[in-house]
Amino acid sequence: MTLVLQVETKLDALREQLPAVRATGYFNAGTNGPMSIAAHKAIVDAATEEFEAGRIIPGVYEGHAVNIERVRVQLSSLFGGEADEFALTRSSNEGLSIALNGIDWAPGDEVITTNLEHPLLFAPLGMIAHRYGIKIRVADIGNGGGDIIPTLERQITGRTRVIALSHVMWSSGAVIDLTAVAELAHAYDALLIVDAAQSAGQVPVNLPETNVDAYAMPGQKWLGCPEGTGALWIPRHRLTDFVPSYVRYCASDPAGYIVPCPGSRRYEMGEAYAPAVLGMEAQLQFLLDEVGPEWMYERTRTLADHFLASIEEIDGITVFSPRGQIGGLVCFNIAGATPQDVAAALFERNYTIRYVAYPPGPTVARASIAWWNSDEEVDGLVEELHRIARDPSSAEDKAVPE
Image (cartoon, rainbow, N blue to C red):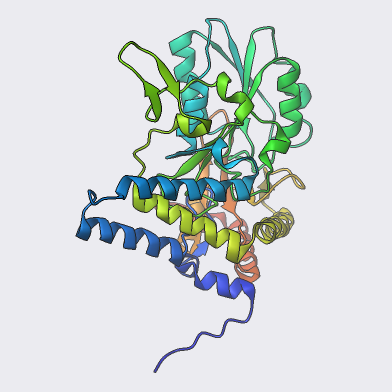
């Protein structure tokens, strides 16, 4: 007997395309988002074809280039900008490293960042500090709420070359006003480089309207693409500000002359895993055609606002995220229970969140509330947190999920 699934709402239909969200209360897109059936099929079909037919048949390289160009067009549709302004990368960290290492630094130059950044922004900043003798100035912006511009501006000196920060802070969920930060940076002839690890697919953005100079995003988080995918957006008028650190596509000769290819493609290493690119294409098309960006952003924000307001009312829970300035990330602590134990206890109860612990940022439990979560799941997570807050000992000594 064939079981016919009765799909009554858009959310039900979409959740049927995301098997992982039916296996657990999926509240950790900040690490990896759920992949659609279409993306999985594209990956498996492409890998099978490579395995059975080989990777050297005529047209392989040409076809791969065409596939990548289609992904650029999709990225343009989702984030604004021109298709040729997107370079495909393997992670947000790779995009940040491309941008930061592409600047012509001089000893004594300075970069401003914040206390809430992810280690994979701190890491390339530390590398260029050692390599080029530059200084990193860290602005303490609290939880990122309110107007952070005066705090950033106090760090600016005559040697400031770059402001580098996240669009959405991974350890507080605060959404930063990029247009205001770009205006500040450009007023002092500095560049704005943005870590989009938590923003791409979580909050709406039209990149040209922000005036940012480099925007590095991953594929696997809120977008739900395969691991090892991502993109770097650098607008055409900024191509001369960021020199490629490694070169794959260019015109060159043995005398040492080199002409990079047009657009942001010049920043690509080139050897992307073809099935992953096709999986990324299928996932982005799923978001564009079936989910709808406007609906997904609005639903994420509405659910997260409800979740934050609900747990704020629970005795023993302290919310670290700034109310009214979030997308889908909500960070909090429960008195008497470590964030590690809270995450582990929830995992045992079939709710998957994570904890964040990386100084100088806070140590918090973090829930990624997203469009695929049902209202019932969100309220169920609130109730489980209420139970832990009433009896923190119930979360002690649990095996911490990675």
